[in-house]
Length: 335
Image (tube, rainbow, N blue to C red):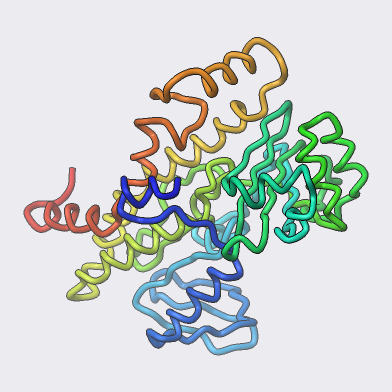
């Protein structure tokens, strides 16, 4: 993807640790005058006023409330008027970080760390592993997806290292060598939600964003990216706002621009699990043949190389989409 993404789409293809990205977002928000108040638990939302009731703090009044509180969203449940817990997917993830300097000392791993740094995938029955560098090549991030064996009502637990190594004992020696460098890690149950009929309250003063309204499995690596796109679209739409009476239309445009795209990506991510986790056999052999012997085509097993899906994913311009939609809105609305 480097330098291809920049040459083809005008922007680099970047991996960033979530903590680093949080710091970037917080610094920019504070530069813009945003006040971030931690330890604020929402207990109730008045969608008509609108206002937010906080535990042990004064209520907050606003013109617009944006619920971006993740998969286990209290805001989503408040809008729906009933509990809406996450759904089990049957998978879990091990998330591991290995120091690149340790990899360079290992003869099996030197090629991964020095000569050919890249995004590396291992595909196998019921599981796959994706690895990539962070922090300028100092850290090697590993995400290992495998069947969920966590006890009921336990969503995160310290991993049994021997159990993890045993699961991958017949895989590539390089992957096993990476796992030998790991001293401890945890495993996270993968959950998601069902598609909502709408993200916004009829009052036109409240809407949802990100995992709160379109949680996805991580197979397309698009969860955070889609939330960022949501924010870019909504923020740019609000730049056109001239009076508060326009807010309901702004939210309708936001959902019009975002809902179909996020649904396509969420469903595509779920479908990719079946492609990556094929059991050994004829279908798996045909997948591997296509990946190694055919030029990419529409429906290619590697969606990032798919000549139709790749530009759908990467050629998206949130500001352009908003500008075009707003022009249509001004001359008579959107069909």
